[in-house]
Structure formats: structure tokens, C-alpha cells
Image 1 (cartoon, rainbow, N blue to C red):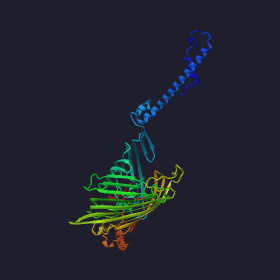
Image 2: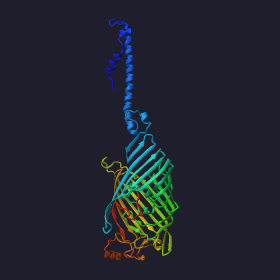
Image 3: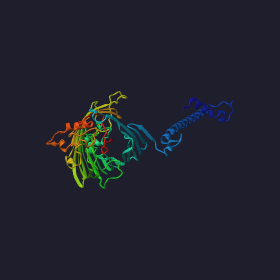
Image 4: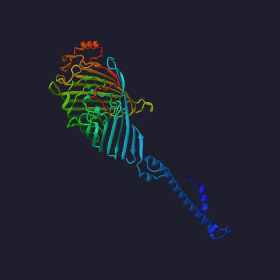
Length: 523
């Protein structure tokens, strides 16, 4: 509110007593020169007092105008309530939208992030004697994570992609110290860079076949932290060992999981080696549960089918080594995993018990065509497509992977010889287009070359009765193809079912595993 100077002068003159009243003379009396000067001094003093009072009133009005905003933000107080009184009943909250909705208390004690994701995919096969082409929703997730009183964290994530809610992450933690944090609940075991990278940010639509040997989410407790300016990252946990969303463990034993990652040149200015990272992980535990089939993640093909009654009963140990290197717009990454699993099967009172070795690895390369640096999490294009007038971020990626199992799995009768292969080679090529940090379009080509001829497509198991000798064997480092391809193809033609031999060539943006025992998990 602004007060004109003329108004102030009129108010000052109106409030000043008449000269004749001060001098004790009538109005016709002529004032002396000294009296006039005194009256002017008095008027000036009164004007200064009015100006100070006006400034104080203006300041109070401005504060009162601010009071309703503070009250509305905190949910406390009414319009016109002074800010000091409003804060007695609540804390100001600041909200923003970046990579999801973020809410933070003014005092920093509380912080929350609400987000989600929708991953839609399609699967197309070059050879249409395979399963039908299809569109599907891989993930539809909502999540909330945050901090309570600065030192405590929580996260809850649910997936609705299969038509029903399923808990993915659900844990609470303590994170006061950067070198020592604690989490309790359902979370990912510390094993494999590929698995620990969210499905939103992996370089391909699906992870490599090596992911079939890695643990995913489980129930347990974990200690983790970083030290030496981020050069060392570690995690140590104890878990049930039988996967997510299982209300109780299958036995009293717990799986030990440990992982360490070294980035020796992380804080240095050496651009050539700054992006180098190496790591190793291990899990060890005792299993008592049925052993499921192994199914490719890209084409939903069961390539290692277990016979009825086969159980994982005994020790299970996994080892993993990882390495990655980024330089400029390029990235190289690779991992290898070994699993020793004790299997058990009883047939007609005869128990077969044997430790079976599984091995898998992958190597991949990525080139960011638009020049940005590769990342293991959210991409940030230099210029977003559309809004910023840029191309977004474009990536080209290529990966090779192998998976194989000890031949004793067939000799001991654990795997079905007519519907299984000893191993496979996988090639994957892809293009990723990040329109902005929140939107990605990917196209992948997958080629699976099975080491043995297996039925693919709607053929019931056991229809071929293929003898064990018809399986391809690895001998002296070379692969021999089976000789029963033509005969089995003729059988397939007679019974009127499609079949594909030797390999599958699905392309498009990937597939979901059909078998319930395997999964391709996201973040």
C-alpha cells in the first residue's frame, strides 16, 4: 500500500494545533517570528513520525499477505496467520517433478519419490512355423521410495503387468554412513552387474542367457556401502534362497551372498582408465525344492527340460566375475557365472544324487552414436527429441553369449534327452533410441543356435522318442550335429505340428519366458 506525500502533509496540518492556541492569543493576533519557526519544527517531527508508522504498517501488511501461502503449504493455520504460528503445526513441503514426483520437507527430515514404468513389447519370428507373433505388457509397475528422518529409507514396488499385483521390492533400511548401510526385506541379491541393472536401463531388451544362473529378488538382510571415494563398493547378505514372494523358507539354511566391485581409477583425471570396473560375487546355500526347466528369455523356448521328480536337494554354489570399461561414447562389458547344483531324483526306489555344473558367459559392446557417455542407469540425451529439437540419444549394441551344462545331467536321468540340449549360443543385436530420459524405443534381433536338435513350437514332450545317441556331443572342443534331423522332421510333418530344428531366429523387441520357474526381472 502506497500513501501519497500530499495526504501525509494534509494529515500533518490537520493534526497540528492552531498557532493561537499554542501562544494563548486570539486568532487575529500576529505571531512572532520565533513562534512560526517553532511550529515548522513541530510539523516536521510529526511528519517523520507518520512516515515511520506508515512503513511499519506496510511491512506488517506484506507479512500478512505471505501468511496464507505458508498456511496452505503446511496445511496448518488460517488465512492471515503469521508464519511463525503456522510452522508450529507443520513443516513446509516442496514438490517437484523430475524422473517422477518428488516431495521433500523444508527441514530435510522427510523425502519421498513416487514413480512407475510401463514396458510394452512385441515378439516376431522370422520362421513362422514357430509360435505366434505377439504383443504383450512386460511390466506395469508403481513404486514409492523415500527417506524418514534423513537416516532411514524405504521402498515399495509392485508389478501389475500380469493382471494381478505382485510385490517386487519391499524393504526398509538405514543409510546414515556411506560406507555402511543396512536393508531388510525383499530386494535383489548382490550378484551380477547385468541383473542388478534395472530392466529400464540394460543395453538390450532382454538379459543374456547367463541370467538363468543368477539369483534375483529374495527375502533377507543386507549390509552394503562404498568407500575410498567410491573406488570400492561391497555388499554382504543373508537370504532365504528360494526367490521372491515366498512366505517361508524351504529349510533352516540361509544363502550367503557377497559382492565386491573395484573402480581403481574412478576419481582420477585419466580418461582412458577412469571408466574401468571389475568385480566378483559368490552365493552359497542349501536347497530343498523342485528344480524347474530352463527357458530362453528372448524366445520363450524351453531348451533344458527336467524329468519328473527332479529336486534341487543339497549344496548350491554360484560364482560370478564381471568387468566393464567405458571411454568416450563406447562401452565394453562382460561377465561369467558358474553354478554347482546338487540334484536328486528317486526312480523305483533308486536314488540318484549328483552335483551338476552349469556355465554361462557373455560379452557385449555398445556405441552411443550421438556422442553421449554410456551409463548403467538413466540416459540423459544432450538434446531431447522433439522438445529440444535434438535427435535424443541413439545407441548401437552387439552381444554374444554361451550357456552349457555338464553332460552328467542326462547320464543321471535328471534332464529329458528328447527335449533338451547340452548348450546354446546366442547372438543379439540392438538399437536403442532414447527420445528423452524417460522414453526409450528399442529394436533387438535374437539368434539362438542350440547345440542339439530340440522340438520348438506346439509339440508335446516325448512325441519323438529320440534316442540318446541322436543328441549332439561336444568332443575335443568341437560340436557334432545330430543325425536325426530329417527323420524327426518327417515325424513332425506326419502328426501335423510345426517344428524348428537347430536354432530360433526371433526378432523384434524380445519375449517373456513361458516357464514359471524363470524370469527376467527389472529393477
